[in-house]
Length: 326
Image (cartoon, rainbow, N blue to C red; front, side, top):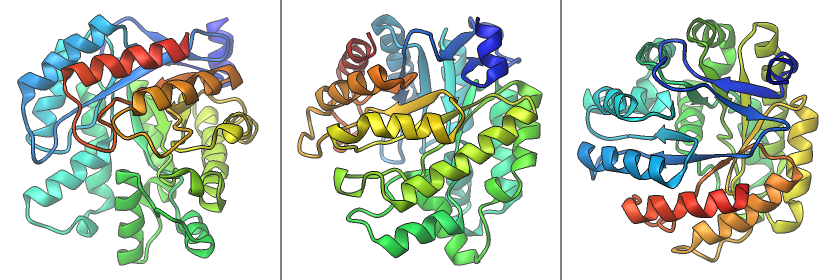
């Protein structure tokens, strides 16, 4: 059943071929809805021991995967430590590492080159990262769709905003879109799942399902098809902030445009008014999304929008998402 799902593109098996200490994890159609927990440092708070404690909490609370979203400190060292400590599959966002390297050199982020970005992706693959978020659908055309329609909150994704600003300042296309085959070569070499990121996800329900979000999703559907042809596994990331009445249609849209590729959603959050309680908001949205066919829920903690999560925030976020997934 799982082999057929992988062949059809509606199931991914998450395990880097260099990360053999973990059990493979299947995500997708007809399988239990999985839950991811985010951890990681920031420039203001770099405590590796705390992140390793969070790994223990993630495992004990029943998360299926962990994403290391570190943006501060020695990101390579932190990633290796988390991979070594975790019995679960690990995901990352390599552009965070590429951006941090520029800041460490006291250079502007827009001075990054395509080689800088791909070098970070290669390093993540070598270290055994199982899945990576890559914002390939943030293109000049999809960003222009946001500009033409207008948004209350603009681009709220960190990777999406870095990419959009890079394109604007350099007057060039997104390297991850323009050199997509280069990305596929790296992913195929490590059997690393590409999580095609929603860099243009809405940051509030007023911006949900606008032209920018949909245009990015159209591109991701095209890129998912190209990945499948090259025997690279892909899942699609989704919003974000979505009114409760539109959650089902957002899932249906992704499944239609992306040929049934597994859908990985952040929450979603069906209201903007609950900072401090967004794990509850996300559980409501996640339950509806899972019912509609979402395959993978990214947890949201009580500290979402406010601060880095502490140990109890991580535990509560996982438990709320697990209830939603169940």
